Image (cartoon, rainbow, N blue to C red; front, side, top):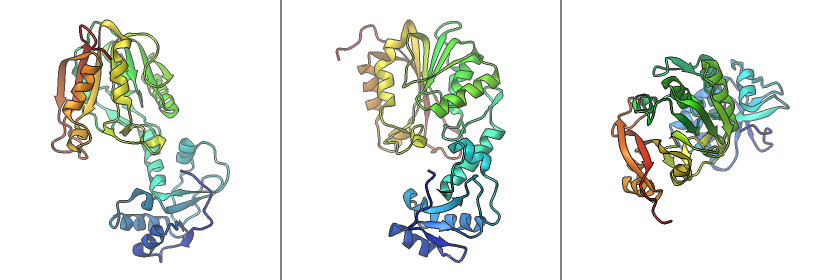
Length: 320
């Protein structure tokens, strides 16, 4: 994140070698870059070949003037991108180059949008909001049968609002989308308004009040501890467990929940299929159908499967 330029930082330019920079990083001394911007990118690439430690790679810092101008040769104009990510500028700051490149990429996505074929439209993600680059989960949600005609629906952890938009396009009514991240709520409202869908977006942790015929959730796929707001959409501390535990209290009698989840955690040894099935049963839920698909994105594992679990209340809930 943005910070004051550290007094302990080594001022360096294009003469700095990657091995030397890495030695400074391992001693706890960051580098504040003063050379050519593209030289900094080349240095970051060279560092990435020597270490996969994100904390170390974040020690290559880029200066930002009070108006978010980067005072380096051949630097891009990042003022709009930084304002979107961090709000109005205040004073000179420093930012890890690795993070600045992410800010630039997020701005380009926000401007250009991401084509979502199942919607027949583009979604424009904001910085810090999970972008629908892998879209196999949307294809599953596009073909899963609705529990009833024109169902009321909740979209839990809406992110960009892409699932809420898909539910609206398929005929769901009175849709409420929620997210704990204020950035995500703003992003979802903007996308849904642009697409012409009347969806209520609420900033809240998990469920809105009341019940719905269909409750959809695509939680983070990897169990772990989120170290920043940006990691909340990647690492799941307890969202999956809490969603399943409370789902029954928010379904209409014949309603169903859609849990959209990759088995990536199973391949990584972080969760077993049996663990997931026990959690579902312990919540008093039963699986009525599971729709599977293999992701086609280049970043997906060859053996990975993404599933949509159709869940309904069991006839009787087990004792807690």
